[in-house]
Length: 163
Image 1 (cartoon, rainbow, N blue to C red):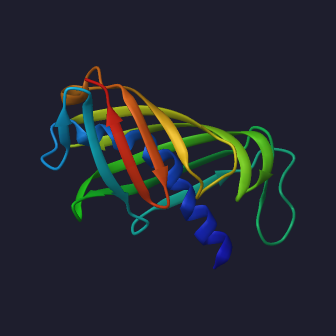
Image 2 (image 1 turned 60 degrees about the vertical axis):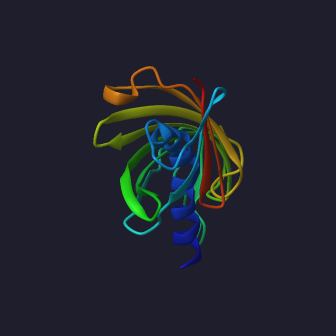
């Protein structure tokens, strides 16, 4: 189902925001004086997605229309080296009306990991699937004080945490 695959592409946008924090203390992360870099895979298997369509309601058939203030919430498993590393919980508010594949939104994400949570924010301008650069804005537990950027494209996230 084409619309469902477009909907499932959206978790990559917000997951990239929080995926950066997995790198803290990660064995596969490259450490250098400039910070930490990690490549992270976002899994569609087990992903969930929901839209809150506020007035004016989308009435068309096919790909749903998004209007200003519509919300979408989604979660998806996060993997590192093929193993489950946590879950990304995401919430976005539409700021530029359009379709699922072409709209603008402000997104907040929480990366729930066994030893703490990470928080991130991103602005998207096209919808799922494009290159998104997000700010890692903090964390709890082992990730307290985390900051940096995460770049997500085609289900792969490159994370750069500042020292």
